Image 1 (cartoon, rainbow, N blue to C red):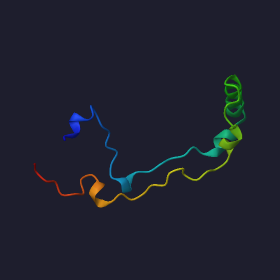
Image 2 (image 1 turned 90 degrees about the vertical axis):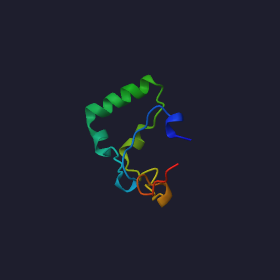
Image 3 (image 1 turned 120 degrees about the vertical axis):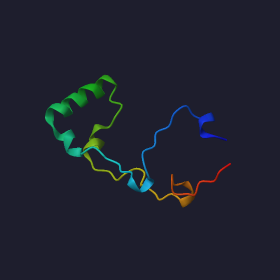
Image 4 (image 1 turned 180 degrees about the horizontal axis):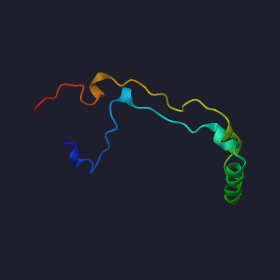
Length: 81
């Protein structure tokens, strides 16, 4: 089955080993004006979010893993059908 019959578009972001993740710096949440605005917006939403968690550093929720060679784009030999 050709990929075009399953999807309309796709995004190729590169090889898995080249992908990176960025996380917000917790220090941004110590800016008094920004913090006050977050608290104001959170109050409007019924204090749905524990804002104090934003001020703590957390490890990445999903570490980057190495894919088996058969699933890496452009690394496997192409076969003609």
